[in-house]
Amino acid sequence: MDHENAFKQWKRQCFSKVDFSKKGNIDDEIYPVVCLINDSSNYFTTSSCSGRIILIDGLSECSRVQKQNCSWLFVTHQKCKVADVVLGLQKASGNAVFKFEPFVLHVQCKDIESAKLLHSVAVNSGFRNSGMSIGKRGKIIMAVRSTHCLEVPLSHKGEILVNENYIHFLVQTANQKMAENVTRIKRFYDGLQAVLQADGSSSMATCKDKTTKIVQNQHQRKTQDSVIEDSQIPANKFSDSEDYLETSLILFS
Amino acid sequence: MDHENAFKQWKRQCFSKVDFSKKGNIDDEIYPVVCLINDSSNYFTTSSCSGRIILIDGLSECSRVQKQNCSWLFVTHQKCKVADVVLGLQKASGNAVFKFEPFVLHVQCKDIESAKLLHSVAVNSGFRNSGMSIGKRGKIIMAVRSTHCLEVPLSHKGEILVNENYIHFLVQTANQKMAENVTRIKRFYDGLQAVLQADGSSSMATCKDKTTKIVQNQHQRKTQDSVIEDSQIPANKFSDSEDYLETSLILFS
Image: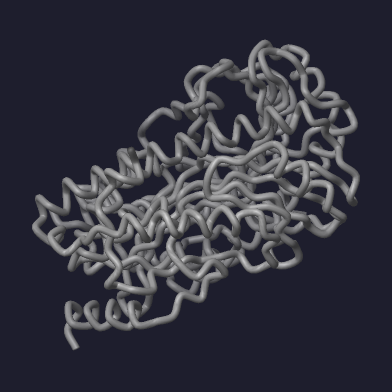
């Protein structure tokens, strides 16, 4: 099978899969970006996260990077409040760590030229740690990544090491990073839209108005964000190629 | 000019350039890795940092990621001490931030297959944010990167927000990450050595014993690490292709 047909088959297979992430759907904040990419014949997304602020409780006395042995005390994909962090911290029994993690996106690309184009838009939008990988079967994945982060230990064996004044400043700092993150996503969307329309590989005419869906999801989000997550890190997958949203005007206004 | 000759010319040009980084030479901790890569006909390094713990003083009330408007209060490429951080923090007049940044390496690769090989070794060693970029003239750069970090605000407008007990725990955490960083560099070196020898592109016979040079550099390092750096972020470049060291036995024992 030639590479172009192989790519089309990979895309069809990806869209037919269930979203196995903990969340089960795409983060609203990046729905237009994901939509725009998947509408192009040269790309499809394989995982995404709009960016998040999290408080995780890890095992004490473990020097290795630990993703498995931790529980989630708090998570939000928007700005956070001091009260939520304080509440989460009170439940910590180990080494709690507060983190800001920016937008991340993995996109499978039809060919190297498409990957280079996407990479260029990502870097110009501020996602300077973006880069591609090429698998054994010729699968080309472009990862959109940023260095923009926070990682702050807050407790040791359940003992909180900082006062509320510090948490207040930390939350303010994290929210500033989240705001910058949104600005970069918007810049990325605009850059992508410009190159895809110039490229002719995007068919924006198929995007439908799903304002109601966004509002519903945001309502669900407000409930979900304060739920304690288990230790699996969500990897959002695009599960339904028929769901399209009106473009950035709603989410980025 | 065909691509292979173009690559050889790029490599020659890179080795003839002056090291413009603030430090002016390769970090000792990764000299064997850099040596191994540059000894291969398929690669050469363009920038590197073994990993560092830094305390920087940034301007207040600036929400954007700021690399330009900050001064360096403290930097080390090895483990740090509480006293050094406390001393640095006392000199802060803005928003001081404590950071651990892991090993980072940029390597220009002869072709995509070489880049894929290097990428595979990097990811298997724990450098999971590694990825490649391909420039307009066909330059292929593989960036070896990790998510393993700390970024911790410690002061606001010169006012220190944490106590010495917190700094003690923070330093302990950072030193654990630095130890893990060294482990990953060792794993990367071993993996690289195995594939390059199997590949036949490495000529290890040319590596010479430079133990004296390492000891001298480490002595200079102890003096340099407590010096206040200016705002330029060092980007170490390999300046002298004739300097080779005995392999990892010395530095990683």
